[in-house]
Image (cartoon, rainbow, N blue to C red; front, side):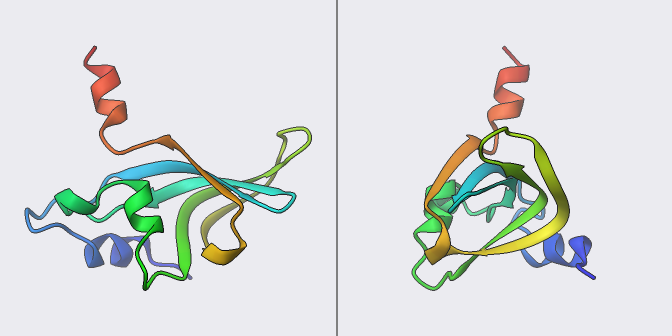
Length: 107
């Protein structure tokens, strides 16, 4: 079983705060996955594109994932955790970058 607390503890920032999630949409062939991607709390690597461009990364770890039917948008499956191989992904769309929810709430 996936241990979310251990994952969060393994990627804490120097300041000791947990990383913020980005909500992303991944299109893999005829499948669409929407999930949370926890980004490192390092100031210069806190965008979805930074994580996708890490040369040593082979998989994209997503939490709270929904698999959608591409034709209807209907939710087919929900998973607490999923790894998607990067070379299988056709498109990644950041739906919400870290800090955007707080920024929009303060407007």
